[in-house]
Amino acid sequence: MTASTGTIKLACKGVWKLFGDHAERVLAETGGAPDDDALRASGVIGAVRDADLEVHEGEIFIIMGLSGSGKSTLVRCLSRLIEPTAGEVLFEGRDLLKANERELMDIRRHKMGMVFQHFALLPHLSVLGNVAFPLEIQGVDRATREARAAEMIELVGLKGREDYYPRELSGGQQQRVGIARSLAVGPDIWFLDEPFSALDPLIRREMQDEFLRLQSVLKKTIVFITHDFDEAIRLADRIAIMQDGAIIQTGTPEEVVTRPATSYVAEFTRDVPRAKVVSAGVLARPGTPGPVVVPAAARIGEVAAQVFDQEQPVGVADADGTPIGVLHRQDVLDILLGREPRR
Image 1 (tube, helix red, strand yellow):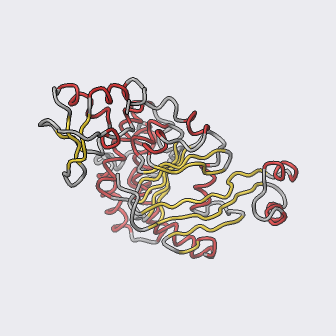
Image 2 (cartoon, helix red, strand yellow; image 1 turned 90 degrees about the vertical axis):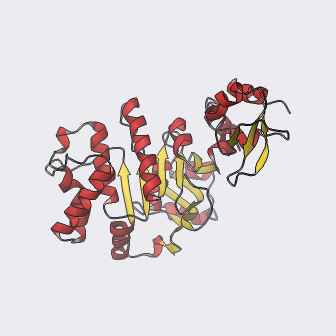
Image 3 (spheres, helix red, strand yellow; image 1 turned 60 degrees about the horizontal axis):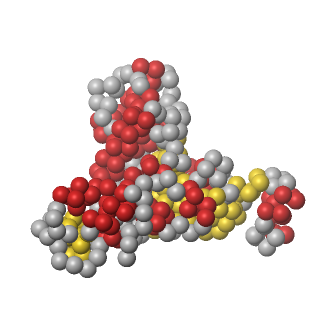
């Protein structure tokens, strides 16, 4: 994972998606900001409401929310698979809403990769054929596209299964084919809509491991939808939480869990084990450390055993190795027990 700094790869500003007759008129008549009463009175559904976000190059940006919160609709607006009713969608500084159909098709074919919950593999094509298919659509010659497909198949751990058909693969293997296919075009941005939610828990964990491994190699800019907070805190650099079509908080997993912006976010994150998200740096106090030092970015759950094994407080250092304080046993214990550390 990467810090959320640097070049903004994708952004949206004031994006609305209203479903129903006269959606544009409803926006115009309400000054571009219809409230719940105005939407109900007009019979229009506000699937996405005045959404703003920025996704930085190389980060994993996760969009979360309950079913019906608008997260999938927002992602389809970001890729213009559906047309926003209003707003701007900026990809590499360019407003996608001003691109014509041919330009948009070119961007999707060459710069965007997409993976969805349902694998949507072509049953009559082999693994190699499925992965090479987007390149065939681009007009890439057979030798080149099959060579590229073979590279992606090896990357996702399916080497040796190039000639298998989807029906001969497990669910996890089929999802790997879908991932390889989306990567074949070398996308600049990668959209994933609940890609692992249809998988059994063990396979899902394996696919998360695989996803993190791929990201460590490829350094893609990723927009990832999930409703599973455990998955989000494991994968995300930053999280946006949606409610009723609106983005109500954006931040790191630690910020969202420890400093919820609304009562809804607090309830949404209530059962998240704090030891999985609170970092050593947040708990560091002034003091003289013993011989053991842990990174400030390490989660408390990862370093708890080290803290309890030492008689002296454990040191905490930033990414450059500069000491920033110490961890005390009692503070770590409080986090493990779900209590606020005493200050």
